[in-house]
Length: 87
Image 1 (cartoon, one colour):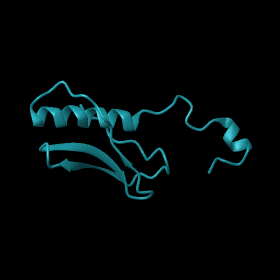
Image 2: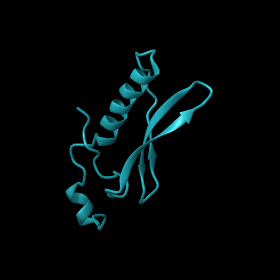
Image 3: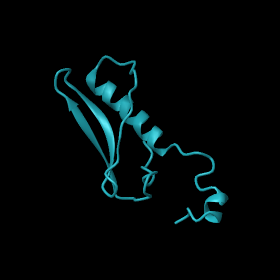
């Protein structure tokens, strides 16, 4: 099961969506996540164990979403509020 995308880790926006870049020379698609607010584009370089293009894309899509959703245990340390960084 593919997880729902978390908000952008850079700006906090929920205006994000999945897209892909096309590698025409190799005939492959690279999954990406795009934030429409801060225009961040996120993708990963991953050695897929699959040779089939569809299986490869599905594998890398899951890995990209997992990486996007990964956050540190302490997203907003209490110290941020003390020095005025919490917004």
